[in-house]
Length: 428
Ligand code: AMP
Ligand code: GLY
View 1: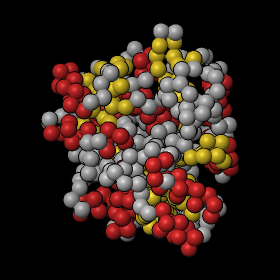
View 2: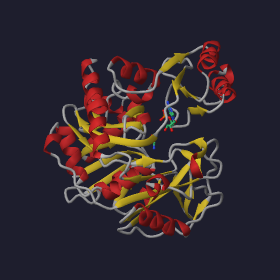
View 3: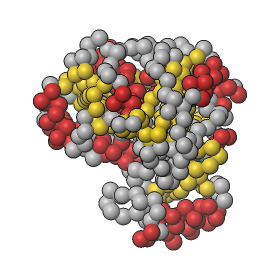
View 4: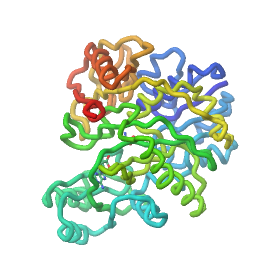
């Protein structure tokens, strides 16, 4: 059978790579894909992004299943378009995707349904936002409302930083963030600063049943020791030891189930991946920092390396409403991925640098491509996060060692990567 993965990042390379191993899958298309999916003879890039043109392609090729990777097509309603045409697609509808596409929607939702999260207030006027910051003090968190790929968040450690962030996000015509808002206006959400350790908690929902994936942890800051600006993610590993069995149960009972039930109560059936970005405090109490309606990137890369079950089979159950029949099997080893980002990332990544020294795919180490493009001369950088070098090992340390070994031979000018991916788990 044929499947389609929509997207062009490292997450989509990992999903497509995993799908190709299913004995029931005869071809995997990736739209539009990247240099990594182009180089794999089992994957086929398709240069289509328009939703109706994609649905035409799916009909013409008799593709049985489409899985949507990134938030942008989900927020744009690709699932609604496919469903209206009777096509099998895994992902949330446009209405459900608001949990991610609007921070204001998500915060109001969590408040309404008693889902643990940071206290917050929403502002569209800069004066009100500045006054709120002055009244509450720092540290405090300022977030642009709208999709900003993890970059529209400033964790302000001082009042000055907080005021600057407000001006940056609500600064009239020179809104440097360039966030496109649902209703055309700029808004910020200002949040209480939460202390603790973060984890990524991702589940599959079929509208009724929920199956949790292996836990993971991302590294959002650009530089070692969690310094520097927030990024889309500089590396990840699975499992995340901070999610003990006790914490896992709390997350399911206090966050995941109430979210699915709350959406249903609000008239929205949730289908797709639901990703709760958690902050877990010293007492093991999880709070939701954000929701995403998709898999994480780069979390998907280590998670897919650990998944032993047939992903195609799982997604067919997920689109049939029979996830209750699924019992996911995981490799007991740790998987750890290190992102290599382009020069200038995250603000203005440079494109077109030649990438050399890419190793062949191996059972224990995979280089998943993100911002790469295939050109006549080989592979070049074409986006902020370029590669995610991912490896399996018996411990976090050995997975880390193997990932950095694989990374060592890869070169492109200006490459940026952290040298400490996995440090929290190693410290434990
Ligand atoms: P978000 O895009 O909402 O996930 O925020 C990006 C990152 O900012 C998160 O992964 C956290 O590291 C940090 N962050 C966001 N909200 C808070 C908060 N309320 N308290 C502490 N850190 C936060
Ligand atoms: N790695 C964070 C995200 O996918 O949102």
